[in-house]
Image (cartoon, helix red, strand yellow):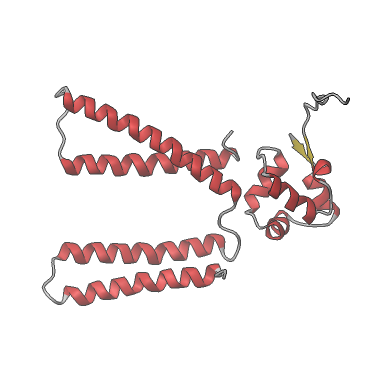
Length: 73
Length: 131
């Protein structure tokens, strides 16, 4: 997984500390999120997306995207 | 009702100091000096810990989902390790390869529960996640 949190953070001129305070987590958690080393819960992903005025899909990118296994009828 | 870090650590610091004062007061009344020593040590530990944690965290968040997850897994691995170690000690004592006193066993248990937790927590925290 990789993230675009750093890009969006720079866009809104936020430090890691600012974003951490807005979301209610430690600064280290934001660091690990940006590096893609931590898989957040859905709630945390949502809170980060809201804080950065973005969608979860825009922020968190899973690189082994495969086609859906459920076929449309 | 949320309490600010400053209020929380101030309260812990005051409790620590009070414990030291109470220990000094009871030491004047012919009480076992070991008890006085234990109370003073605990009070000092609380006072110093509150100062250090406030200096480290200030008013920012102390725990979040990541640190709680790391703590939970560190506790889990520590428990597994302690059970294996205690089982090994039991077998060694049963086979008379080892003779230990109850106090030595208690020290071993405290060591097995504290040190591995700190190591596992540090390792998972540095790694970022538990997987």
